[in-house]
Image 1 (cartoon, helix red, strand yellow):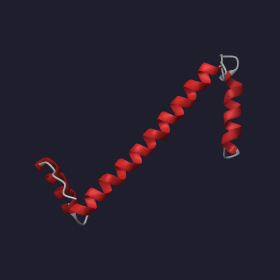
Image 2 (cartoon, one colour):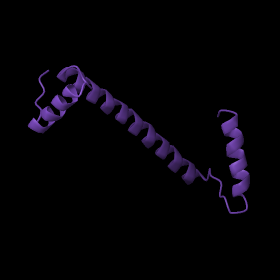
Image 3 (cartoon, rainbow, N blue to C red):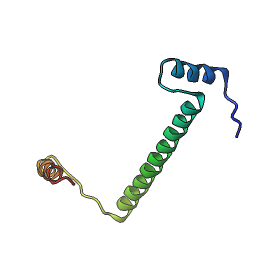
Length: 85
C-alpha cells in the first residue's frame, strides 16, 4: 500500500526519528495506526456505555442521591474500591 503524506507530516515523522523515538518511517506510521486503533476501541466502548446509560435512564434504572444520602454512597464506593471491584 502506498500512503501519501503531507510535507508537515513528513517533517513530524523525521523529527521523531531524529529524536530516537522511532527507528524508521514505517515504525512511526505503525505506531500512529496502533494508537488510532486503540482510540477507536476506546471510543466504541464509551459510546456503548453511553447507550447503556441512556437505556437505564429510560427504563428508570437509576438512583437519585441527595445531600443526605451522599455520605452512604461515598462509603459504599470506598468499600467496593477496597474489595477491588
